[in-house]
Amino acid sequence: MYLKNMNLKLNADYISNDEIVKKQLMEAIEMNDVILLVAPQGTGKSEFLKSLTRYTKLFISPTISTAQQVEDSTDSVVTRGRSIYTFSISGAIDRFNDPLTDITSSTFGSADGIVNNALVDDYDVLIVDEVHKLVQYSTFGYNNISSAINTIEEFIERGKKVILTTATANLMYCLTESEDFPKVDIAINIEVDKSYISECIVLSGAQNKALENLIAENKEEDNFQIVLYNNKDGIKKIAHALQKKDIKALSVNAEEYQENSDKQKLVKDFKSGVYHGYSVLLATSWIDVGLNFNGDNITHLYCIFDSYYSNGDLTIIKQFMARARNSYPKLYINKPELSPQEKVLFDRILDKDESTVKYDLEKLAYEIIENYKKGYIKKLECSHYYGLYQKSKNTYDFSMITLNYQLEKIYEKSRLLNDLETELKKFLNIDKVSIKPRKLDELTNDEYVKLNSFAESAEENETWYSIKEISDILAEITTNRIIRQRPKQFINKNLDDYQLVDKNKSINGHSVKGYLIVKI
Image 1 (tube, helix red, strand yellow):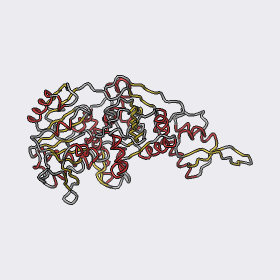
Image 2 (image 1 turned 180 degrees about the vertical axis):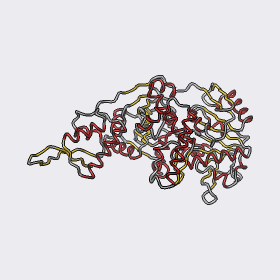
Image 3 (image 1 turned 120 degrees about the horizontal axis):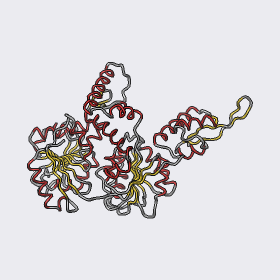
């Protein structure tokens, strides 16, 4: 995968405090052009790289929030935008009113503004922070990937150094096994004995209601809980429900974190351990990198995706579990499942050569794109095919990075399902994993989505159901697991926005007991 590998044992809290490691790192950077630096969260990767005084540095980070981590801790010049029309540069000045250009900070999406505006020669080294995010963005934000990769290639072409950093390198092969990404000269792995959580608890089901109840159960006096739940409507509903239980909770999605100054200030205070009476922060995946919470009373973390992990992976979990730097919390995650489509593909590729599988899927992807262009396919859902991504509103393309990531997620889930406890202990570097069995009346995320969709349609159409009809529907949604539950009690317990109400109906002169679904 890499031309050279180097393993270094860290014998201090931070890289900058270990003179031996620091010296070896500086020598490796001096002697190589493209460097991958892998070090656990909290070991001071960024701080060390900022201190390379002999180089003029351009940092690029996945998002504005992660870029601000660099900008807040240094007198950085800030760059945003891509073209000559959108590109802007601003920053601090020194005591002589000259601009500070030793460190410049940008985002993946704005990075090629440096290239487009012919500014590459202003820098000696490009530092790509949280490089694994390029892989995760490949299924939905490919423009950001293109911007970052174009910038990386331009720096290499001009003889500049490129340093890639991550705490979780397991997705790196998705980049390095693609012709779209430059080859890495040396991979440096910083080894350190560091643990972030006391226990990982695996939930079999964790839809809104179950998650709300669990957070409420774990409420203690003066404790704080942080939730990553990739469902912006879900976090809002849970926060609202917790407020009704006198638990002060704040929900913040990615858009709100960028645009709502009040919520920005609250999150900033939470990071410092000042909570203003709040007990719970619920966020989407913008929180998984770059934000550190320094309070010593964070007792529980939750990292919840849909049943198929279509919007998540183990790398997000590993990044998120290190957010509480001065606490030793429990971490809750939900058990992943292979989707029906993934099961079919996995069975077909199980014993096949990986390069053959990729060739066949790439060929199929280009055939699908061509049929879409010709009008044979009216609507194209990228999630239904492998390696496809949406370039613009009506334009699609294939990427080997995207395909590698999608296949890795299938392999990753299959390994977990084969031996969940062992795989989690190894990947998360923890000793204690507890697998919580699902209660009979507890829905999986997938079942919750199906039940909610059914209720929405039934309410809209004002459909009446007999007891048998509603029981049969529940049995179908839960694959006959729920067959003897009281329908009214079951639906009212598991849905946030709908309730089953009694409604008798006259059939052939007889009053028949039944139900309507109404919106709360």
